[in-house]
Structures are given as C-alpha cells and as structure tokens.
Image (tube, rainbow, N blue to C red; front, side, top):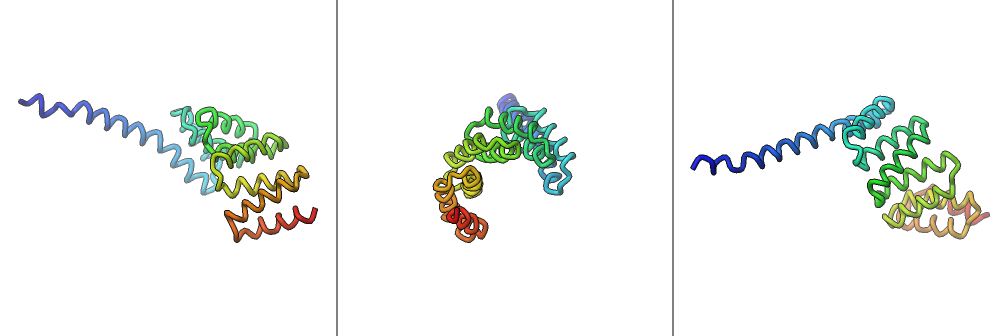
Length: 173
C-alpha cells in the first residue's frame, strides 16, 4: 500500500532538520576558528559570540569565545566564559587549563594552581598543564612540587628544552 512507502518520510525529515541545525550552529564556530587562526580576533570574537548565542549550552563554544577574548586582553570576560564552559562540562580539561592561564594574568595564582591540578586530574598526560603548574609553583617557592611537575613534564616531553632549563633553575634555588 502507498502509505507504507512514505512511512519513513517523517523520520527522514527529522534527520534532515537536525542535520541542518547542526550545520547552522557549526558555521560560526568554524568561521570563528578560521578567523582566530588568521589573528582576525575581533571578527573571531563576533563569530564565537554568535555561536554562544545560538547554543549557550555548548561548552566548546564558550571556551572558544573565552580564548578569543583572552587574546584580546579581556581577561575578566574570558574568565566568565571559561567558568560557563565548566558549569556546562566540569570535566573539560582544556577549559580548566585555559581558565588557569586567564587567572594567572589577573594575579590569581592560587586559583590558577587549582585549575591546573584539575586539568591534570582529568588528563594526567597533559604536558602543558604540568609545565605551567611547575612554573607557578616555582614562583610560589614550592620548589619540591615544582621539580616533581617539571620531571613529569619531561617524562611526557623528553625533548623539551624549556622544561629542562626550568627544571635546572628550580634545582638551583
């Protein structure tokens, strides 16, 4: 019978609509990323803001917007969007790492340390988080902890000249 031939049409239309919405939402993120890579930051911010407006529950979009804002020197606004990303997805290791970087710019080292540690807890092989945590711990005078973090960084990135150099500096203090 003819009605059976068209029985899948509603589900196909639903799939098409869902796919179209995904593409529409993905366009500002893709465009923002391309603009960011070209260092056209104000334009990237506008695209990421559009992505966040279209889907405020997207932790990645919040994180991307925060990255662009931080690059523009808008630390307070960046921190707000990193925090929103983490409210959406508390297990987003990159957002913890990025928030730590933003907090450091604002002189909030203790909070930054907590977020570096959280990023590492979520992704133990996060070499950049280990290295930057070690840098902060060195400045704070927590040299034993810093040496440990530099050693972990070097286990993950044995060829890192910067980690070798900073480990040597920490050992000399």
